[in-house]
Length: 256
Image (tube, rainbow, N blue to C red; front, side, top):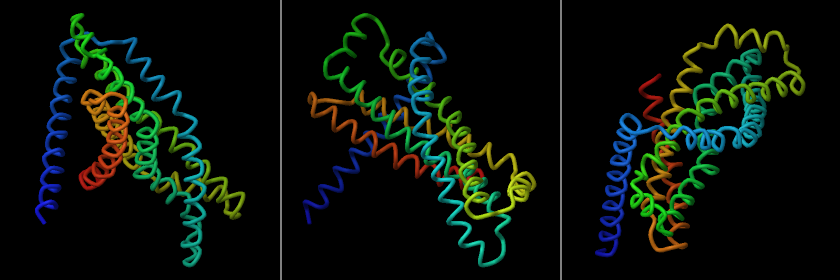
């Protein structure tokens, strides 16, 4: 019993410590961006890594999500003769929920893990300390460009995800299920609201801001050599994935 209480208490303290560290890093990064020099070259490098290099995996994920969603919705709507609403349902679910959340999770797996590993390696090899010795602020040099790049590029990837997902749904709906192509597109145009898309982009921006901070924090908190880098990378992916899902609930409750 005492061991269980000790384990719960230790986990709670670690959670509070990490949360406080992430909030502190967020404030330092905000101050760094507003008062210090903006590392344009580093920022564009990170935007290329997060945006351009992640496009293929986002396209593949969104295409098959849209296709599967059209199939699943058809089998439900067919019972009520509402097949004409499949296009709108696919579009609104992608815009509000699936595109921002799934894109964020893909970016967590691909980029946040890389952020934690790269910064963690720099930390254990004392490269971060070397930056301080040279008078370079590590938050300004390492963290701020990654946070800016992720916050900007994740919404851009969500736009691509929406387009490709709807294209996948259209292919299945028209070519596989035999739906009327004109009615499919017309119902999207009639019923979709711009807020269904803009709220998804707001979610994506918030997700990008949160997961980039978590990835950078876990990297800067790395200790114990190569083993510590692996632990920090795992913690970054797990914490970022959970944060995306938790933030999604609160953003949905607030926006909708």
